[in-house]
Image (cartoon, rainbow, N blue to C red; front, top):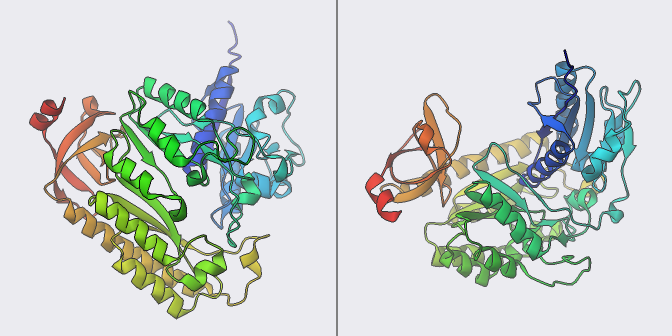
Length: 449
């Protein structure tokens, strides 16, 4: 009887959409080399953990998933990549069970490092370049179990925000070529995926480093204008974009687009101009207000998400209330609230005016409650409207879920034939969990088809 010699690999991703795109690309490379993809909790020959450095528990999360891998197969090789791996490679290499740590430059060459890798008895092997050497671009996109794909168009960041380690983990701002972005978008569309989410570290800076130089050969507006002309792409969603890089022309293009959906996620971080200056953000609240007003002018029903940090050094109660009141009055849809945590090698870590942890948590809770109120008000404004919903594949207790173009979450009784389909639905009743019960409008759907 022949023995099965197929090697297997499992993957777990922490953090942002960009990480998911890169994990998926690493997985395709390994699959092309003969590794069969299996679940992370199954026995595998190789476990790849793609880490994040944004949250303050990166170390704990990394250790947790190394333990999961070792439980599934004590003899499996554990490879750690990602932002945390670039920032703290030696620390990670000493975690029991870790065999290989790859930095920002090395992670896409994982196959060459696996060839002679053996299970570590002491500590893992580190291959991590200086971040200044990470000046190239590897195009990536995620596919698989999702009805949407994350398409990487840009990487790195030239901004010097005083709280952020991302430039230390990912290097300088650089971009994919428009030709390669369009090629990847067509490949995604040909696989039957209905929605693409554009991702990067600072996607509004698209075009810088496109051909290995610091010049802008193209702009973000050029990119989205070209993508909007690609046949077969039904939905394109823009992920987080800096307010100073979101121009009127881009907003207007989205409002008239056949593919781009009315949904923006715009980092604010603070509603206090004093703190924005301390954070070294590249805008003040007036510009942010103008961006939101422009979106509302041309897309009244657009979803607008906001990132905000509480507990930044020097944030007094007055500063926090400035932020709270600013957000309360702003016509936005929801908040992503982050509690400030100190990061090594950042300017903010040495600043005076440290906010006590309990106070940071209190402020976080206040903004999360505000976010729920904002989201509920937005959802109530959508009652009675008939909108297209892209249905996802999961069956959760007899229901399936999906999102409208403007990011309203909807559910209906599970129907296998609706998976990965776009159907017109009428938004009827909001459930306590903030989800709409929807009534599929088949007549309108057929009329549209």
